[in-house]
Amino acid sequence: MTGDATVRAAPVSVGDAIPPLVVTPGEVQLFRFSAATWNSHRIHYDEGYARSEGYPGVLVQSHLHGSLLSQTVLNWAGPHGRLRRFRWQNRAIAVPGDTLTCTGTVTAVGVEGEALVVEIELEGRKQDGTLCAPGAATVELPSAGRFR
Amino acid sequence: MSDLVREAATRCRALVGSGGSRPLGVLDRLAIERFASAVGAGADRRPTSATGRVSAHPLHVPAVVGWTGGPPTEGLRDDGSAAAVVDELPLTGLRLMGAGQDLEFHRTIEEGTAVTVETTVESVELKNSSTGEMLLLTFRHLFSDDQGQPLVTCRESLIAR
Image 1 (tube, chains in turn cyan, blue):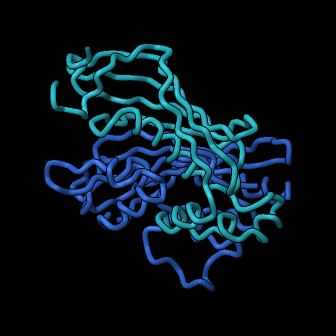
Image 2 (cartoon, rainbow over the protein chains, first blue to last red; image 1 turned 60 degrees about the vertical axis):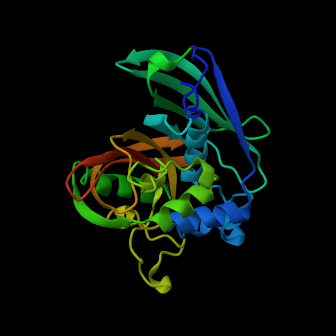
C-alpha cells in the first residue's frame, strides 16, 4: 500500500510487545484531565484533603490510568486501528511525579473478513514495579490482506 | 465505618436492576480537543473523519463525570464531587473511588453527537479488604446518540468505603 503511511507494514504475532508509553503525570495534567471530564473531586487537586484521607498526595484519576493504557494501544494501532473493546482495573494509586509505564503484549491474532483482530494484555506500572492498572484491549486493524 | 458500609450495602442492593435514561448533551469539538490534550493524544494523533468532523478519543465519553454545569460550588459534597449516578445512591458518608471500566465500542463518536445514557445498577457486593469492609458497585451505562444508535457500552466499577 505504497503511499499510505497509515497502514501497518509489519505482521502481528502472538507474543509481540507493543511500544510502551511512559508518562509522568504532573499536577497540571491532573488538573486538565479533571477539567476536561468535569471531575471536581478534591482528591485530584487538594493535597491537604488527599493527605487527610491517608494518601501521600493528590491522586491520578482512575480514568486517566485507563486513558493512558488505551492510548498505548491507539499509538500502536495507528489512526486506522479501531478499538473494539477495552477494560482496565484500578489496583494501586499513583501521585504526581510517579512515572507510569504502560506496556502491552499481543495474546491472540485473528482474521475477520478483511480485518485483523488483535487481543492485547496491558499493564500500567509505577517506577517501583507496582501494578497500578491491568487491562486488555481488542483492536481491529484494517485490511489483513495488506499485511506483508 | 463498617456499620455504615453494611447499611449502605443493604440500601444499595434494593436498587439493583433499577436505573434510568437521560440526555447528556452534545459533544463539541472543543471538549474533544481538550480531552485529547489532557490525555496526551496530540492533534497529530486525533483522527478526523471523512466528514471533516473530529472524532472523540474512545475513552472520552465514558470518562466524563459531569455533563451539566452542575450545582453551585456550595452545593457540592464535602469531597468536591457531584456525580449524578452516585447522588442517586444511598452512599452518604462513604468515600468513593473509581475501580475501572469494561468498554465495548459500537461506533466512533464524532463532534456534534448528541449523547444519551441509560444507566442500570448491576450489582452491589460487600467485600473485605486490607483496610476493612467495602462495597463494590457495578453500573452498566449504555451511551447512545439521539437516533438511538448505540455508541459505547460501559460497565463501571466503583468502590465505596
